[in-house]
Image 1: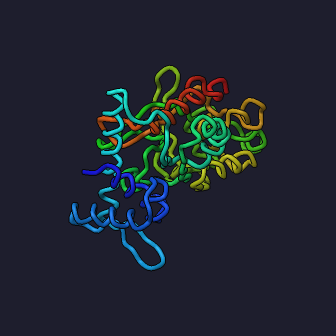
Image 2: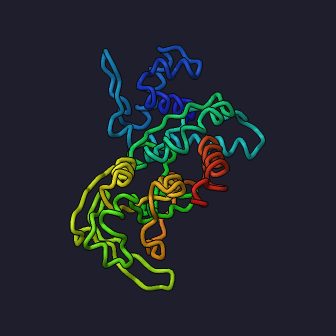
Image 3: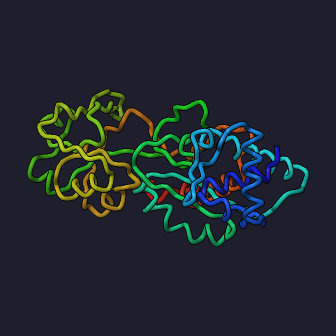
Length: 302
């Protein structure tokens, strides 16, 4: 299969413009359209829906896109093994990440990364909502959850330590819990769901944080809003240390029940579709994030 036509299809699916994708690869618009049509005839499926005003990716095109990317990566790896191929990193890298973390830790690094790889386009999707990496055609994503799908591979970026915290004003008004059972009489800020969170003490005693048993609950689905509400005295919440370490350090938030930790061991994972080959653009961005964030996370001393 002609990998240049695959590159054209991938670019067209990203830009939703066959002519623009063709120009990027040095093709005239008519040539680009002809090559896409030839690829579709070869596959026996319409990859791109065309109209007089726009194009869109068909369901077959969505299914085929990850495989097209994979075949391109395989070719690049094979050429690299022979000392051939392009040495510069180019193309488009589609990256998804939680919005709050990206704003705090990734966005400030982007000028350095883009200066290092000026031929690479970084297309970032920022959202705290869950998403499907494969269906979304992302090359790479950052998640703070356990890897579930066998079709995905992961590299650990950093530990994602979670702590219970509250504002000093809240603790002065409602008291400081000294045991997990004390949380039943407190206001608890819950994130996304009301499922119990298992806790374990430093000497191995198990306990639970069960928002359903709290005297009052505030449910928020955004980490930054949850932190803001906690700072303003709305209640006790579980927060990632990377999000609140500065506030804890300066005393704006107090670590509640410090002798207890979440029994689960969350981490920040860089995940990508399972493949025999990791494309150069994915590899350099993962290495960059691990070097600048994961090697010595600024929140570990929080």
